[in-house]
Length: 354
Image 1 (cartoon, one colour):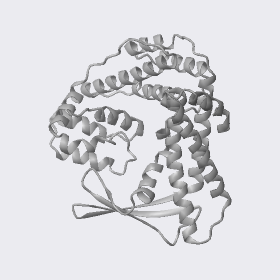
Image 2 (cartoon, rainbow, N blue to C red):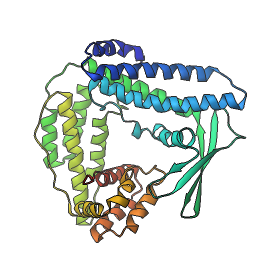
Image 3 (cartoon, rainbow, N blue to C red):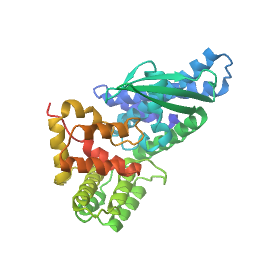
Image 4 (cartoon, rainbow, N blue to C red):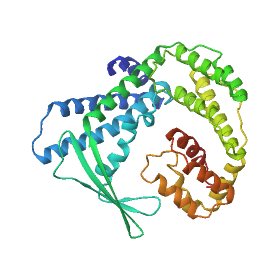
């Protein structure tokens, strides 16, 4: 769909100058227009000199980085929520932030949570409008780690185009949707107690129908309900780990309940799941080691973070208790990115004392 189909809603929102949402939406709308112009120019230009190519490439990467922020802020400006956008589930765009930080943001000196420092060097011989290769040299305690990355720009642009169109369509459908009261929140409340897979599938169907979501929609309600499906089917023989899975399941249902209520401008009941033994032990461990451990848990939900494994190992070096270590090792043993997200999210939910 065209961005301009949302213009009337942006113009309407800006009329209330006592509310920051209008200016947030307008700023985001204008930035998305500007990035579209940048992409259009990038696609038709054919620079030959290396300086011109670098200017094109750096501008494109920074423009896409800003455009993703603008999509989030447009959603919040027009709907008050970011439910319609979840860039992190798009692997191509999710990786953009790491690429941008490496070669446009901080190529000459980056510091990492475990004390390492990094420097990125672009391969000067292979750079073109279509592709860029670079190496990042990471030093930690006199040990060198070299990582090579190839960046293909056409797939990046296509991923952005598809994601942007889907997000804008979801936002438009929501704005056209008349606020009604459904029994979706009540069904979710029952789901919190039962964790019944058939009920979950019914709720997904009701939500998709009510808000006219496309099958490939990245709406956060559908994403969380898919995570819950994974959790319901996930079994561990160890009772402590099964307790963690139950807790994560309740957390997802609680998030779904909150989204469903907010979509209908309603208030609901409190959904509470007691913190399991292993997680309590991990939080206790964090309390004792905040100074060294706080940065290490920041991206434990993201297996694509360059320092995911190193941060896990750094936590283990801090001598966690038996139960805290068991939970860290549970995360370390996973290979499924969704399971890593789920476990990592409850670990990084720790709140520091100050």
